[in-house]
Image (cartoon, rainbow, N blue to C red; front, side, top):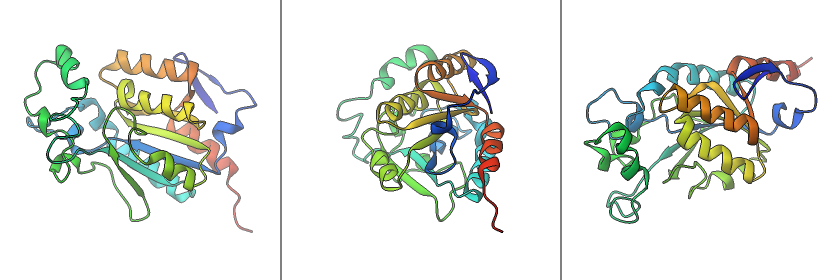
Amino acid sequence: MKTYVYGEQRELPPGFEEFTTLAQTVTVCIDLHQGHLADDPDCPCPAPRAREIVSKVDAFHRAARALGVPVVHVRSELRKNGCDDIHGVKAAWRMVFPLHVGPIANSDAHAIEGSRWTQFATEVKEDDLIVNTKKRLSAFYPSDLDFLLRNLGTRRIVLTGCMADCCVLNSAFDASNLGYRVTVLADLVRGTDRDMETAALKMVSLHLGLVTDSDELLRCWHDQRIEPS
């Protein structure tokens, strides 16, 4: 399987089965919901670069399901009265991110439960699993994702979604610190911009796990599948 090491693609040497084994693997898709992806001036936290990966993520999920890999969709969701954020301890991104992108007119509506902004942009099938208690940058905080993964017997997770330099990177750090073997799919994540995306993937490849493309991982998984006799 080919992987990216500090941005350079190379063949993965033997000894990485802890990362690439199909069994006990779960794919986790982060924050591909309308609050980031809607092509709408009212979109409360736009991540427009991630719109281009939605259909590709859906295709990867279909292939993963066919191989028996559970699909988990994680979304940010805040209580309606704002006590989790704007009327409590405000998330830092609300203050510092606008220094780069400028004022975000509808940011107070981001991730409010029951709003249209929490609707998934990706396909969600009946047997998929949803984690909607993410309230900060990591998919693990303060959600029940770790609880869910451990109950599934998970040893390996594959991360997709947005944003590569923010929620995906934070989730990769937490997953690695919690003892999971982490793979991030470079073609199925998007960052603030290409430079930040590249930097985030370089960090993952040096410190947290593998960075590869979805077709490479699926090829590796298919090679392990035992067809019924």
